[in-house]
Image (cartoon, rainbow, N blue to C red; front, side):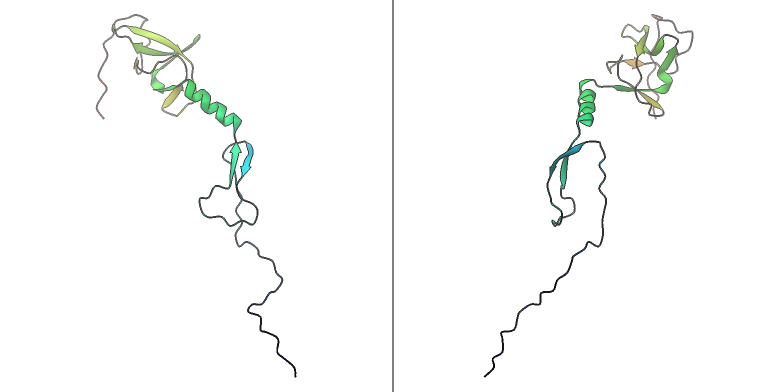
Length: 145
């Protein structure tokens, strides 16, 4: 007498699974792959770290920035002369001093000054052409905004 074979609990068919969406990944900095944390075909979740990159140039820029802090001064504080750029300062003895500085990035109304200032100086805004080095000056209080 013929017998029935047991019924399979699932159906197996050949096929391929393809992604619905593909997203290109762009690095925000130049570098090279240090470690890949997932493989092609792995399930990933939102926010999961996929890879780590080495960024030696960016790391160097960060080290330099931390080693030498820079300051921002208003653009109207700059005095441009044939021998360089200066910022007019009021010394503790209330005398005027022109401090030579170097300029960094221009932020529109402010300019980065990487060298030449300590950060605790009193800066003169819009210094007049007739203000001479060492001249006695009176510092005005900042205007209320």
